[in-house]
Amino acid sequence: MNKLATEYLNSLSHLHFGSEPQANQRVHQQMMSHHDKQHIEQIENMFKAKEGFEKGNMFKNLYESYKHHQPPVLRPRNEREQMLLKIDELAFCMHEINLYLNVHPENMRMIEHYNKYQKEYNRLLREFEAKVGPIQVNNDHMTTSPFTWTEGNWPWEVSTNV
Image 1: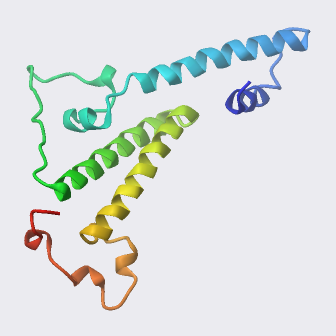
Image 2: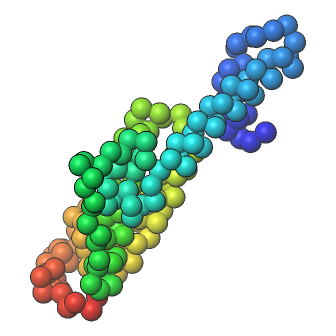
């Protein structure tokens, strides 16, 4: 039995569904199995990051196209735009999953999914800022004096290569 199932069973240990401990455990496992299946189905029912970002919704069962509207395909022109697009896609995914977790805070699989996106987002953000410069005001570039935010090229001055 996995850690999540064990924690769930322990949280239900005060409930009794029969006189035998094995009967209680079987009922708990059935309940957990159904609950776990729902969580897996919800993740499987999600768009990939790029498609969800383009459609403005990560959840396939909640997406309805407006009058057969086809979202535009975003085509970055260089590495800098490609990195920014990926950062935006991941930020959108995390925001959508965060909204889902507000309603379903017990969904450990979705939390793991969120953490996967967050890890990749943080990695890409660090990589982008090392190559191009800061894009957020709440990072290490704002802790020095004078602010390094004002040093270097501004976004409209950046070359199209990176």
